[in-house]
Image (cartoon, rainbow, N blue to C red; front, side, top):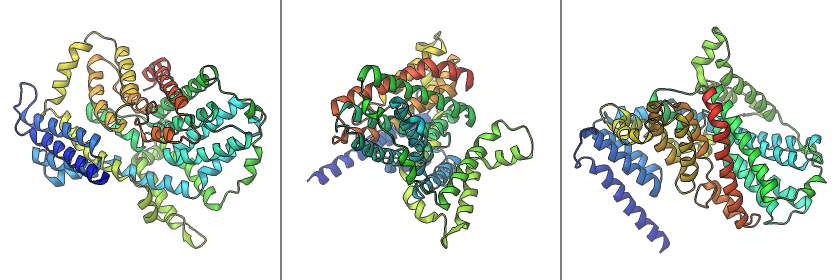
Length: 479
């Protein structure tokens, strides 16, 4: 019965979505919004409805077909623009590469090595910071959910060893911290699927793009400040008891580490990859800079894929491309990105009048305001809305709009995009805020629900303070 009811509800939402997408052919155009603009706008509205209430696949594919009907081009042109974008290639190849890093066990070995350092003995807050730093690094190299499950497993072992009770303030704080930090590593990578959603909105609205090194430097700084603020909240507001950690010694954890040949290769490739991606921005003009710039992130990771398919360990290829691809490629995200590209182009085109309409509404409100007002407004809007709405949809919708407004009021559109990319990850204060929040509030064996609400709100406040106090001045100077 429950499945039939759910199926019925989905069909109702699909009908509403299609009705909204079709309505643009029957609504009148105005002085600003053209006939083409009305059609595209209603396709956009219908897509938002579908993405919220149906899922990502059906609405995204429907967007492509309706854009063809609206006159954007042939199916070959529209679908080709979506699937042929570099953003899709980046998501595909980096997903496969990071899945390989996880499967060879490099991430687990890195985590154990970092947590077994002697300098952490007798320093409980430094140990917690290292735990969160390891989470950050794992999130950077692997991904959110693999990181959460890996680090939670390590945390459970620590809790049992030192005698922390389940559902205590301490276990809740540390497990919440892992969920809080796990996504930050992803924001640092301008080539991650999440960051690319925001960057795509920026490029579509303004034609501007991010520079890898400055973008990552900004995100690392904001992440570290947010983590430190969260830890201060744990010490002075939550008042966690760290006495048991003070008497613990985890140097023995490092004795279990025995790097395999594949893990050593993975470590080398990680270093080479980071150098190849970031160094072109600081290299002088010359052959090396030309080659690396021409290859870009996509070319570099494809070269690695070729090498890993050729190199053999124990008589087998180091990378089984097909098997890894079947596990790792996030098709929901890819189809969303495929639809967002052409849809954003259509909305922001001069032929639609959509941008002029948005500006005509918001310009009188923001006229005369300083850029700082827009920055603070964006920070608070992002951090509040993401507790109640899908953060992916918010990133898709808000980025091009607010970046366009930024140009009008003299603000930095790149900083606006960076604020949204980071701020919208603060989705932990309600169980439905994100799938990470679902994991936190669903882990009732170890996490106290009342404490989870309190600490999650503190984590959101930490992000808001970090972005306002550090993010705005740093981003204004750097981005």
